[in-house]
Image (cartoon, rainbow, N blue to C red; front, side, top):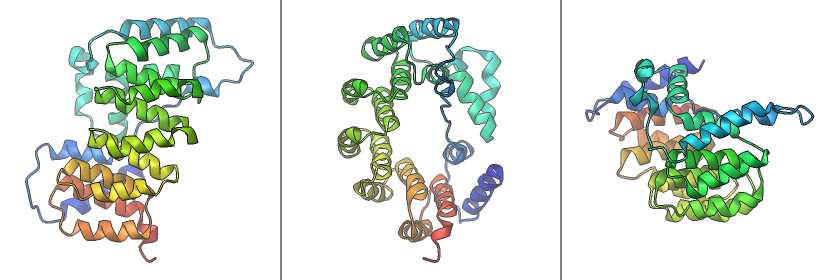
Length: 278
């Protein structure tokens, strides 16, 4: 069903008159239409009496330590054996590409929700002192799955980091914690962060937590001059909106020029179809 949905959305979008040529159209459509990756946090599914083999934690700790100060990179650029993954554009192909070209994803999944003191301490150290921004972001997300509020100041401080990768990781960590104590920081990021992508993600988080002003931010940015800002905002409007958002997006679709944004609009409209007659 997911594959059918993707092709239907693309077909609807491409049926519109071609108002402007878009470089790398196939890549843009795939990036916007594929389902997001999900951290499964396997250690959270292990029953308390069942101890985790120390060897697993030792290997994860070693990997984390090796990556703390490594230069940011994509393993795909270094390893020819995964080069063909960059050409895959199905849902499964997209997930495989990310899983095996970004070690931070695997580290996050393996460390998410960690309670082992040495691992938790190393994750904190990575967030505070590591020079690899990808690993710092992954460490924050892994810590967030503990839902432990003692890490809240750590994430709050990272929201001020000059690097967008670190700030986005901090914001994602706050949203994963899903606690009323994070609402102010999320709202502040939605209003003031220097990156519009961070603002949009934070605004969606605000709305999801019940702050309606997040919706207003998304509606405003959905009319932004930058096509990527419009597309990303519309994605979240389609995910959480209702009848009003359906009518607005349907209206915008008639004069949107960018193909990737039109495809995202069609996807949003499909998600909101149940509100079409309300």
